[in-house]
Image 1 (cartoon, one colour):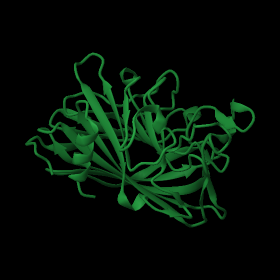
Image 2 (cartoon, helix red, strand yellow):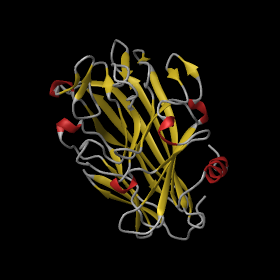
Image 3 (cartoon, helix red, strand yellow):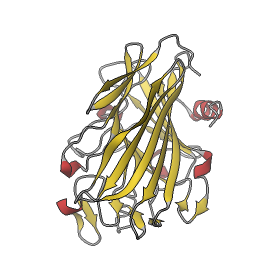
Image 4 (cartoon, helix red, strand yellow):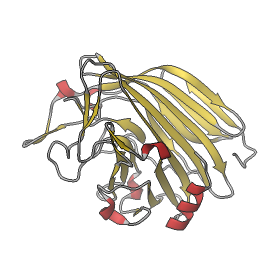
Length: 310
């Protein structure tokens, strides 16, 4: 559904990025150009923009240069770091290990389309060891839909299917599985803009930093802009099929979330325990992201989530 007369259109800057525009407003950019090796380069979405023009993602902040908008990452993958920066080592803390820094490379687009009511950006990726060897392939589909100017929000659904190419299991972990308490970041990761520091974290049954490491079908983050007036709310929700227990992990995943010293959310797929992906197996996950103007409360969030069928 799209309740605006403004057309959706894609602008492809070949070799660099694809912009999705609603009229003259850039809703998002999918950036896939190669970047610095120490940042574990990978495609990402930045900026994500509200319908009122507020940017709700951060890019290369001075504290973590490898934090870029909304991206899928793997902080610990069978000894490799596809996250970026220093590597957390049990008993030693964060250490420089450039030989462990891998990458996720864009291998091509399967679909780039924009119509009156939705757009699709689908790509193929390779998850690579530091030496360039492909350890996994990923098929990723980002669908933009339900653009509702009257209600002040738009929606994207992110689907990823990661297939293990190795002849041994891929071990997905996090700093917490390596011994650092309550630092289970990995998987889909959103970094907010600097102005959103000390924003409001909201879940179905709780609020604030107490939600770190908990399980819930959705989490929301609300912040207030610098430069322009107004607030925005970003919601990340699990698809129904993510809600299961099995050999590929317990779901809904445990949430990594911070409002200090920066704004961030991630439905981690390996917060407290490693996730093992057998040879030839595929890890499939789907999430929904709502980008909304205004400071939404719990009732608004649940009402809008229930009104958008999967």
